[in-house]
Amino acid sequence: MIRPVSSSPAGAKASIAGTDPIAAKRLVLATDLDGTFLGGSTAEREQLYRWIERNRDTVGLIFVTGREVGFIRQLTSDGCVPRPDFVVADVGTTIAAPDAEAGFAPIAALEAEIAARWGDAGARVRTALADVGGLSLQPTDFRYRVSYDMNPDRFDQRAFGIVADLGLDALASDNRFFDVLPRGISKGPSLRRLLADLGVPDQRVLVAGDTLNDLSMLALGLPAVAVGNSEPALLAQLSGHDHVHRAKAEGAAGIAEAIRRFGYLSHNAA
Image (cartoon, rainbow, N blue to C red; front, side):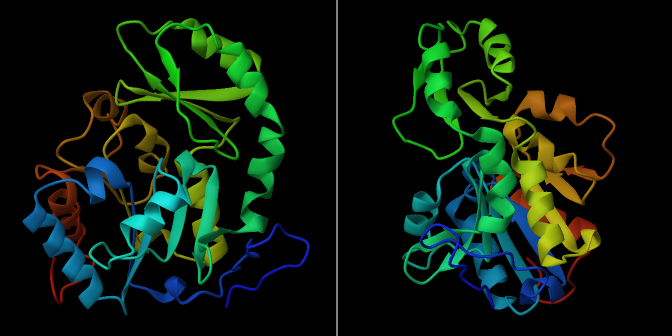
């Protein structure tokens, strides 16, 4: 159903434009990975994953993560972790669909604005932040982002102003990551773009996360859960967002708690 386009980069996919079966699912779980879908005990994760696989005819799955698609391909290769229907990766700078050859391939139409806003900013970012204290450049060469490991004890707050002067956005999360992103691009806007193109109704979506880089998607107004092990700074930012369930259970168990809380499915309960 996802048609290749000859004018796109090799492996890229065209817009799905509401044609994918995920639009008819009764629940579409859009979840962060580390600390959220991959969080909790082994037994809790296995229970949620088995429930998803039993209900694939009515449950859709989207990973919304800071990880790259190569990590997701490896993570799901042995079948222990459910394979997602779609992926919003690289903190929202990649929007991809499953691909038989590449594992996951970018959806060119949905990434066009992301690419345009980033341009060739990578080299400028690395030069501008080269001497900023508390930042260690991550070795992965991302397409539309530059990411750093952050030492909070040495971090120089000037970094935010430097990035803003470049016309880009900076995002610090979990007190240990610092991402430079295209202006206005993050997990939330990219997830919203994907859901709109798929034609998924808002009320059928459950968004799940645990750190500040999940704030933009948890604050979309869609049904959402901040799992029990969420970053305190995230919970503080979510004050007043009554659509967000603050789970007591951690990780995967927190997602299952929210599925029950919102009453999405009455059969084969998580």
